[in-house]
Amino acid sequence: MTLLIGANLKSYSIIAADTRASWEIPFLGKQHKDGDHKIAACSFGLVTGSGYVDALDAVKKELLQKTISNTNEFTDIIQRCVKPKIEELKKINPGTEDNTCFLISYRNNEGLIRLAVMHAKWNYELELYDDVAVILPTNFTIEKSEEYRSCIREKLTEFQDNVNTNSCDNEIFLNNLINHINCTVKLIASYFHEISEKSSYVSSDVDIGVLLNDGNVIYIYGDSMKIKEGKSSLNVLINNSDTRFLTPDIIKKDEHL
Image (cartoon, rainbow, N blue to C red; front, side, top):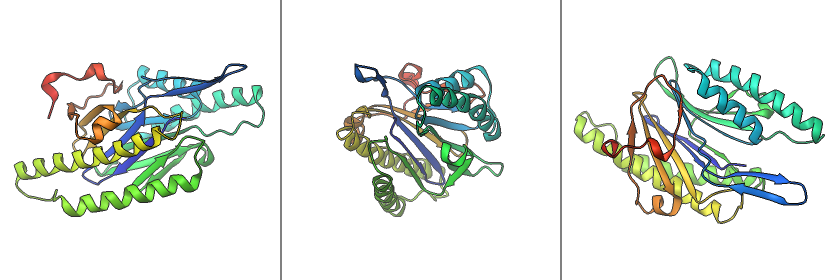
């Protein structure tokens, strides 16, 4: 199970995911590998997922084959790709609980940024979140998830009060926005570092995607400890219609902010 954290800051949103893929082999127990990058930048926004690996891989394959322009098309992919895989899994392991879910951020028809979760318990329909979404691995309780969500929300409110992103001067606005994003990224990374030390399902490295109001994406990748200490750079990816997963190899030196 992947750790996912999302936040909607109105002028931008953040989607973050660790890079560990975990599975279990009979007689060998739990296995994992890191470096599995799970955040996709689509023409409508950012998408990531957690749960049954075969179901997630089916969605990943479909995303890379098509241009996805809205949430309805993404929902259709979920319905066609995830449910059959889960049904196959339940035939092999009856009683398996489906915890597969997706965290997405997108701009609606009015250009407003939205944050939403699509979970099996809601039949993969969009469930909007006004501020923060936290999806923990299955070895954490729902209460713990809400505790982290509350803590992150409180910290983000402090940032919102201390950093002015409403200036009419473009240069001041941009500088304030970058400062605000840096503060938020470091905060999110601090929770990834904390949780990675408590759960074998979570890697120490993290992918972070930032969706801006104009549709452009900022990408940050690295060790969560280094990111929380400010030892990372913001990398701007120009928005286009092609779906691509955010991986370190797509970063170019001239894209640093």
